[in-house]
Length: 66
Image 1 (cartoon, one colour):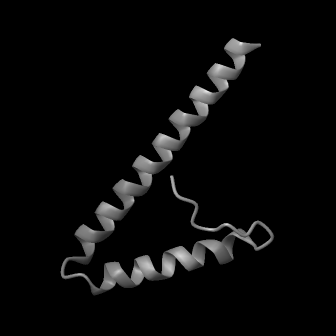
Image 2 (spheres, helix red, strand yellow):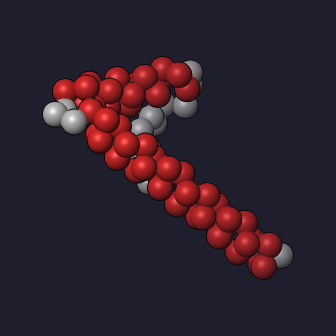
């Protein structure tokens, strides 16, 4: 996973706007905006699932070590 916002003192909504605005522009400018939106949502869901798997693996490893 790549960090999209590396400044921790800014509000989360501001960080998200920096990511969402270009993505929305890309989706709207594509020839098939519905398909582009569907792909973007699928990728987001896959990233969330991968992050959750990694977090569970860390918790499991930590629990096994202690």
